[in-house]
Image (cartoon, helix red, strand yellow):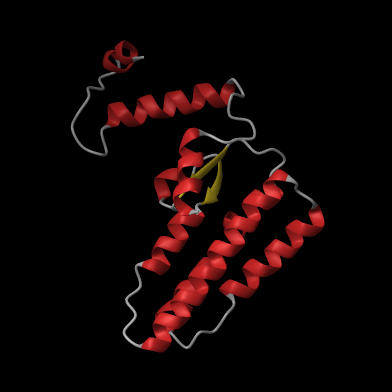
Length: 164
């Protein structure tokens, strides 16, 4: 592939917008897609634009990191933040358990719990605004509840283990 790109005037350059790298990654993605090697694959990310390709879902660990990063200055704010974090991890662990024995009824229950968590009004304005932003990405965070199959990669296992 490198020879082909060079023959068309592309040379590797330093930096994130290297046209050689972009073309190489695009060709790789196109080849895998054409070969149907990615059917059923979901790209899991923090929501950054460069990952908005193919079928995409938001990562719960990245979601919680945003909450974790919030500065809380009063005891009520600390309690609100801790409450939301504990409910998110409780739900996250229940979703992992659901993956072992998925049922449509339980998926609906888990989705309702997500809605209750991100719909809470905590009186911590910054946290409430963050929850509202998370709520706008509901479908992406809950994509796992609609997946037909579940695959575990070493990276996914490490992410789940680190979050548990």
